[in-house]
Image 1 (cartoon, rainbow, N blue to C red):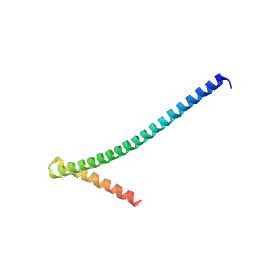
Image 2 (cartoon, rainbow, N blue to C red; image 1 turned 30 degrees about the vertical axis):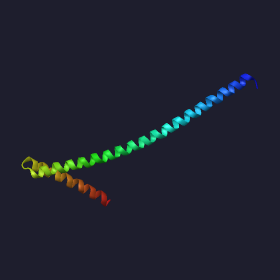
Image 3 (spheres, one colour; image 1 turned 120 degrees about the horizontal axis):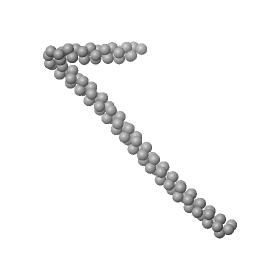
Image 4 (tube, helix red, strand yellow; image 1 turned 180 degrees about the vertical axis):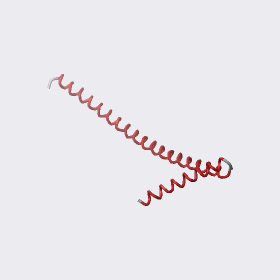
Length: 97
């Protein structure tokens, strides 16, 4: 082969080697980012569960305060109890399907 062809081939090999190293580096970074996404998704699910639990506790506290108070709060408490009973009835109906 001519010298110019050899140098072109060597240059191409060098570029291919750089591309392979770059590809491997990007692949490793992608794997790290996927692991981070999975970790953050799990944390979000945990926080969502925590928010749901705290929201339910807050509802229960409001209901208990309404039951302990008088006047308009009693009406609100009865409304809340009726809402809860309807939710329970819906759940029972779904279970019976």
